[in-house]
Length: 262
Image 1 (tube, rainbow, N blue to C red):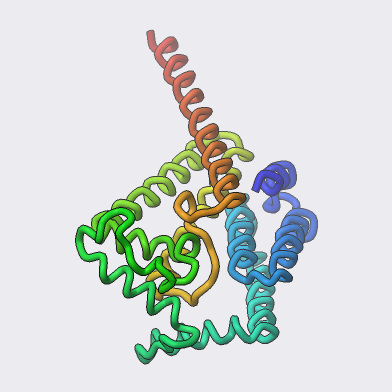
Image 2 (image 1 turned 135 degrees about the vertical axis):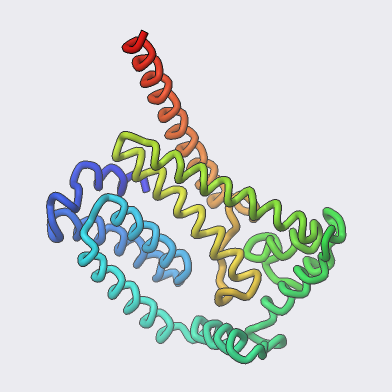
């Protein structure tokens, strides 16, 4: 995100056209997403590509140029599904669940079934912090990918709603800092980091609630982890710095305006 914001500030796609302004950052994002896809990790590669897509769009690129990454992204998704049968199995399970309501709760749909049981058993107030039962070998990856399900089971509807409100506030404040920034680099950086945090949160919550195929993505600041938590904390620090700079600019502007009208 840092490098992409720096690049887009120095070489705006709106001024340099497709090949000189748009293609280089697109190739960079595509190369990084491709390396992640080789792991294989389709969800992380897709979210990285989507974040880069949004940053390039925020830099002022022309809308007709955006058709290129959309087409390439679609081809990569089809290729990944064709070459990795387990990904296709998860997608087929999700489509069957959303269209017919049937869930293979002894096969590919086991995690989703246990996740919905955890969320539903929480009720309004939950079983109490630490009192959840699904984490005891019923729900796989309960501490990372499906941490929201455990939180909903232990803290109930009210606790889950509070978490959603906190994420909404984080995204709102991040976008607010981006919009108020006068520096193109700070604007792109804050926008990209906020969008990335928001995408990760939405993807994780959608998987836990059956609104998206099962995949392995952490919930920012909630899931257990090392590198993901450090990266998210660094992103929060950068967003805070951009917000502080915006406040300093506004204070100076108000001070000058008061002097001119004194």
